[in-house]
Length: 172
Image (cartoon, rainbow, N blue to C red; front, side):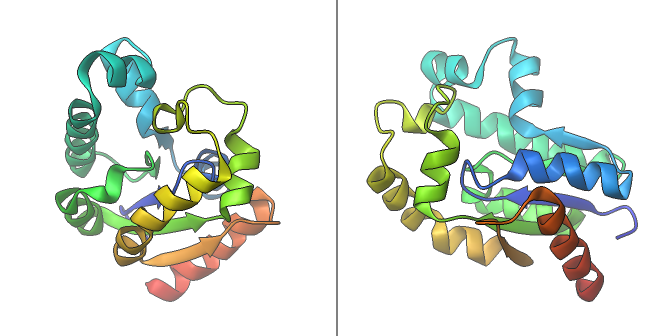
């Protein structure tokens, strides 16, 4: 994995942030949260960006950040849930690292995000059925982008990281 980024993708609530932090500790590689970097650069929350400028503007910010990562040292990147919905983002990520898809059941996602008001796409739609439908719309794109798929239901961050590390060794 010399100099290659590890991109964690997947639907919100699948564990990307938690797993990225644990992978960072285990591999001694810097970790970033794309949403945090974008929010900081814009001086407002992701919700604020969506409300003031719209989703397309936010997606452009994601694309710009992914492009900027080409020039950076190896890191673990916790991507926003929609980052791979643009094919140019996937191409750039594949050139610069490995893409790990984290998955979870819609019920698990709901349980993990139900009390979080910082999810613009779930605003006024916080139901298992809405989550299931949105996951279904993204499933093929997520799977096509992924170098590896890791299911996160009923596993802790350490178990997931060990599975990722073992999988990365096989991919090399």
